[in-house]
Image (cartoon, rainbow, N blue to C red; front, side):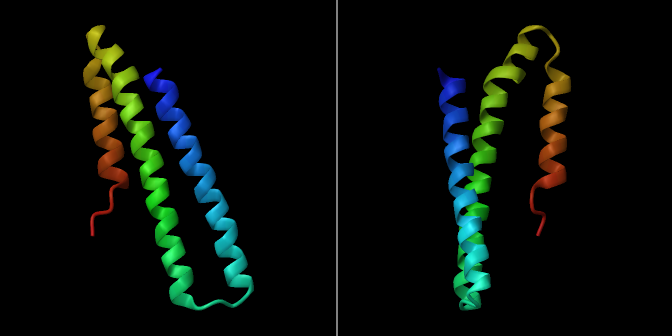
Length: 91
């Protein structure tokens, strides 16, 4: 149940982001005000971050937890640390 709900929430956020990206492309085609376009891009980034956090949370509660029960959690923990170090904004 927990995994399904997390995936469903992530899917909904990604579908919303996809719709917003289509809207942004139309705004660009319509030569809309740059600041309005930028605001929409930030909104999409926020949705993508939200979806990613749901997926990572699900991964921790499923894959990582299972690996830890089997005595193989170190590899999964290193995997999470790697992805956070590589992709988290360092500015």
